[in-house]
Image (cartoon, rainbow, N blue to C red; front, side, top):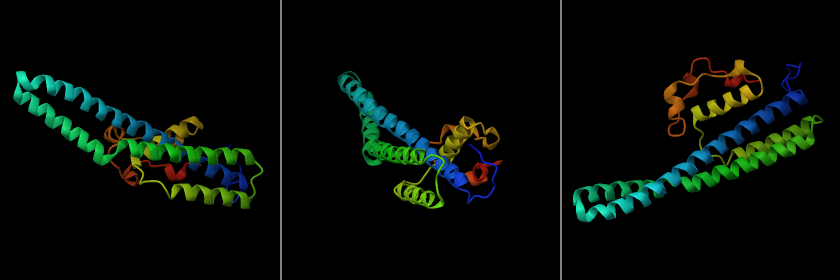
Length: 186
């Protein structure tokens, strides 16, 4: 849906820029929701299985039982303090809000006036204001997936392996990534 006009004030360019941002945000929040929900389920599974194992080991090997109990306590405490289930719900709500905005933009079709684009942009920024801080490498991965889906492979930014592995755990400064093309997406 790329336009010939390079003037970013053109209504189709504004619509494209807005759709790109909305779709990127939706994808990001869906990925965060999936990861955090999985982390919460894993913590619950470790607690349940570890509790059963610790209980069975207390009589036969008290030292092993104590270690298992310590591990269970640490995992359960981290789950309570970090709250992945609550964070997953927040990301789910944000993804839903961005999807609704995308649907509203789709209804406006190609006849998006500058005023309508400004209203949609304001709504986008309003939803974005409720977002927690984003994780740079995960944003880059989402950007890359959208770029490939939109047949814009030249806009893909390679992610180093450590960033790919830990994109859901740590925030990586993407301004340091060589070949960063996120700002040159469209």
